[in-house]
Amino acid sequence: MVDDFLGHIQGCAEIEESVAGIFSTRAAGEAFFIEGTNRAMLRFTLRNHLCNDLEQLKDTELPAHRIRQDVSRSPGGDSRLFLNGCVGCHSGMDPLAQAFAYYQYEYTGEEENPIGGRIVYTPGVVQEKYLINGGSFKEGFITPNDSWTNHWRQGEKATQLGWLSPLGSGEIYTSGTGARSMGAELANSQAFAFCQVKKAFRTVCAREPAESDRVALGQVAEDFQTAYNMKTVFAELAASCAINSNL
Image (tube, rainbow, N blue to C red; front, side, top):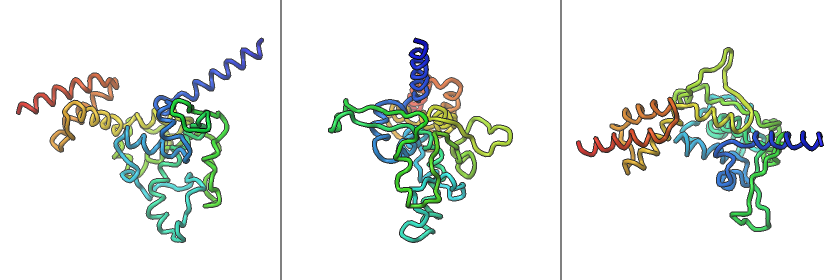
């Protein structure tokens, strides 16, 4: 009976560990954990929730030691393509996408039935998709677990993203374990707050923000960071749009 109880507690702990907000929803898993390499989950998180795509975060000066083996260092036989292009995105993306190393999405039947799929979480066991195409560059990074590092804490993009929490004593980058803590890291940025305000603005004001709106949006984003209450964001934007429409 004791063994059964401990097994139940262990299972509950694993379930709790796997829950990571939108990352662990069925819709997100079906869209971004299905097949692929799980990099899509990070890329579309940046696009949808920080309003920055990888091209906007490209930085060829960041360290490349965490880029996986499946990325060729000389695509087409030309290493300049990697050094001037590929490394700029992968050096920031791969260390963060490692947070999803235990996630997979699979369908329970032979056909891709939308209601038949599920997220699979394998604590302690890295999904095979992280280890594919190892021959592309054998000296590349081999994913051992779901620990992540945020290289965008340094370099020219650090200011663009506006990290809100300071680095610890002696830290160069922030790091953590699992998707939940990585999501918290991304959310703890000015880019995340401004992105939510920008999306709400489109909904409330029925137009794209103009340059003249930037100061007002910045103030709403700053207010949002105090409590992360979207109701307040919509209320402030509704008032702002009503005033501006009457000018």
